[in-house]
Amino acid sequence: MPPEKQPMALKSLDNLFVHFLRDMYHAEKQALRQMRMLARKTDNEELKELLETHREETEGQIERLEKVFDHLDMRARGSTCEAIVGIHEEAKEILEEAADEATRNAGIVASLQAVEHYEIARYGTMVEWAKSLGHDEAAKLFEETLAEEKATDAKLSKVARKHINEMAKSRSREDAGKGGNGRKAA
Ligand SMILES: [Fe+2]
Ligand SMILES: [Fe+2]
Image 1 (spheres, rainbow, N blue to C red):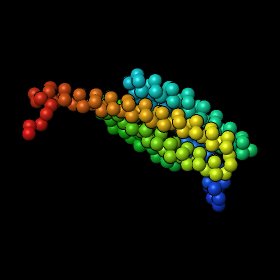
Image 2: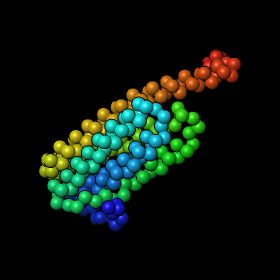
Image 3: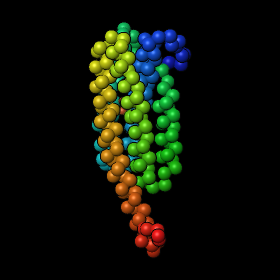
Image 4: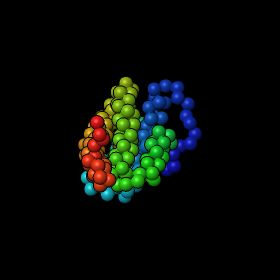
């Protein structure tokens, strides 16, 4: 089902809740697409594995969103999430411009973290709104998803740290190859 183009009037927390629900339904599907694309672009096995795990989790997250639509007696339908579209555009630019594998991998991790942080922000809000609106089942489902997004973000931070080290090492090797010792003179 293509995302909804017509904006709906936001007059209450109920409206906002549905708006965010549709936004995340679109965002998660885009995230799936991005993860498939990035898994093909990285040569890092750890990152590939992480992407595979989170891709499976994301499929479950989409099912949770569908359950929430179902609880609300609504048809599951997405509306374009401009934030995710922007993050993906930026990711594509980084991939095109990265000159080597280490830089590309660092860029991939950064793009993935931008998505996770967005998801954490949205689901955090939606847990609270679901509670306020008395949608207890939805709150529980969003809490499960939120925990997965936070865990993924933490795993990405771990991979990122390793990459920064790798990049630093390859930089000092390059400097050494140019006849220096990798350090600037004091
Ligand atoms: Fe997600
Ligand atoms: Fe995620």
